[in-house]
Image 1 (tube, rainbow over the protein chains, first blue to last red):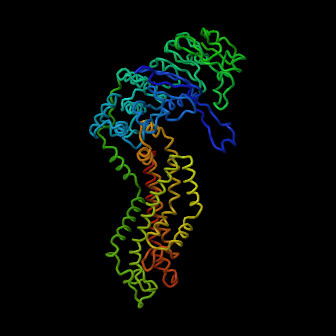
Image 2: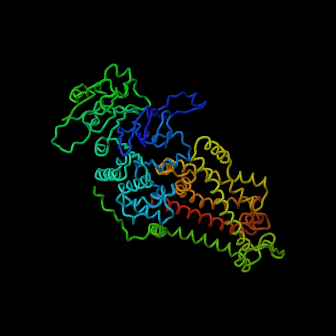
Image 3: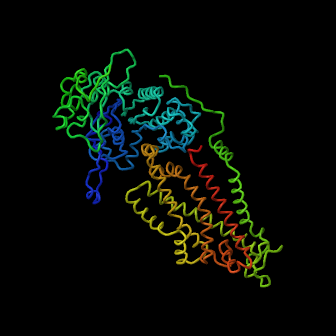
Length: 346
Length: 293
């Protein structure tokens, strides 16, 4: 079948959205647009990384993509099927094809269930093993595939380290043979040394099984290894999206440039220019009018506070939502010379 | 990539479950053992009542009314000349059965309600929670008296009355625990895996809220015995002439200045059992708390 594996169109999730007379009486002051009009496509065997600070709506996007929560508007097509149109039981069947690896390796494993029970659960749900012994064999193979000894399968999660637990979580995700795996910050809770192992494992599994990854992360350094394409989010909206090489080599949006300048450089002698954004992310309940980034943007002009820039093409499959992005990237040096709230460090 | 070599933890150690149990038993203090022994002794007495009791608990004798303790009647006799010790031994049956059966029923019903309310939330939660609040508005003894007065005495009525009085407590605890567990990532991962909701509740919610429920149950075994004694004392519990600890006290009240021994005996039995269950409940709470292990 051709066409993308996963396609999101105009996905919006508003929290605090209430109906009924009580909500009407209170007004709608507490609404948060966690995800605002986000669209993307994910091809087979491809990895799309979603990057942004905490609170930018990337985890919400992950849950929307799997219909773990329902969107306020917009739709998600998996192999061309609108997930919202599926009945509860059809949706459960569909989950065999789409799995998730969670950020928290401690909370995502049921504390009183053994590794065998945890990893074997999808096999059981989808009837993939004829009996317990067959299931034990399959779980053993899955554990071996993620680099854990099958002899550990009767232990409880608390007997494992964070990295090992994340491997258990990955084994569970791949157990039923999905085509899509949503990885919701799978390494941000882990030590740096373990992060690389897990990223390598995910890459390995992708090569062997042809998974598509929707990879959520909050820094661009992790993503550099695994992503084919990158999507940068800020306050629920996509600010830049494009192929990894393009986004890293020629970031068009000032926010992407700031994120990239924060990526650690392995060579301590390499000349580098840090762009430090001042201030915090505005509260999602009070997003600035116009461009959401305007309150922290070093090159913001009057127009940025008045009108919201659309996501416009700036190259092949490369788009940015900035009034000053197209057609050429703003040189980083120009950005750096701008007056506060920007500063540079050498 | 080279996966890190599969890590063997202490592979020689005992399987986790047996290991945990042994550690659990080793860490208990003297008071827990004493309490457990007390409970076992009382259960044994209740089970073996016909063999243990020196006399027929219902046999009256007008020759020995309100007798003081003697070598034949260790706790004396009551106003019908019945042997108080024998009544105490047989009363243990009633009191312990009430004490064990009612909390179990209350836990089953209350936990079901609480888990449903906590897991599904929304209107379901509001309806169940208001019902529970309604029951909670009455002190449990008052509630029990009201229902018992309406239904009359008798074994199952009393069990029912005590269970109804305890349902709100279990529902509250179950609901609160479920609300907390519902937020855990492993519930979301169970949904993501495609598990049906009843199975999610059975496998992932119940085991993780079991600890407070079990503890509550042991604590309320004590309350149930106390409540049954109160109801019997008020004359709406166990029907005379059948003995229970509550109505032994009630019968003894008329002659408290002549012979306080029936009240002292039954009071001691109630105190000992209630205390023992409370101590065991405390120990269970510490043992089941996953953070303690």
